[in-house]
Image 1: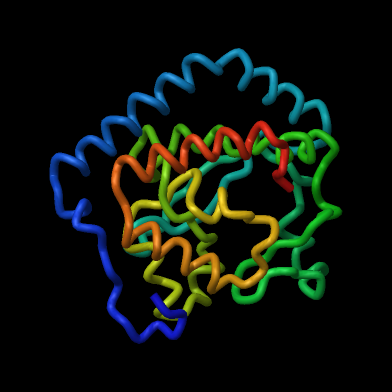
Image 2 (image 1 turned 60 degrees about the vertical axis):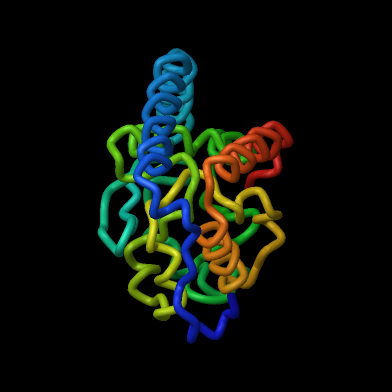
Length: 217
């Protein structure tokens, strides 16, 4: 699909299968619940580390947009200083991502513990709760901040035609090397066009490899 945004969004035929949609939700619930229970001691240790490493809350309340543009609040382990959002305007000139998304390497707002959490994507683990609730899926386009979504073009908004996910094609396709936001959107639309349970499984397996490689920033 071209980035010009004039073509209608193409959906995989699997999105029209109630059985496959139900199976996707079943795996979301079972895997997220199992991981939350299995990793609870580890999550508790991370929470303590975040609290002791810098002043501020344990969780970052993430005001994002879900399927169809519906806003919801997600959670991450706080990996930045408590006033990170207020400091963002001072760093706008350093933005390495074209478009409405803000992303810079070596962000000075990141705490010492936060840098380690981001390296292995551990700050993302509380999003398993959002998957369990049904706001997110394990695999799907990454949810944008509400403030980012407000600046999206109609083409870019198409990525939110399905439920957002913790991981996606962008995550496993060299996310740190992609600086063009429309390329990110293209990968999300490709996921929507190609979606199947086997594609979700492949992305999850590649995500595990990516996490253990410590390539997060």
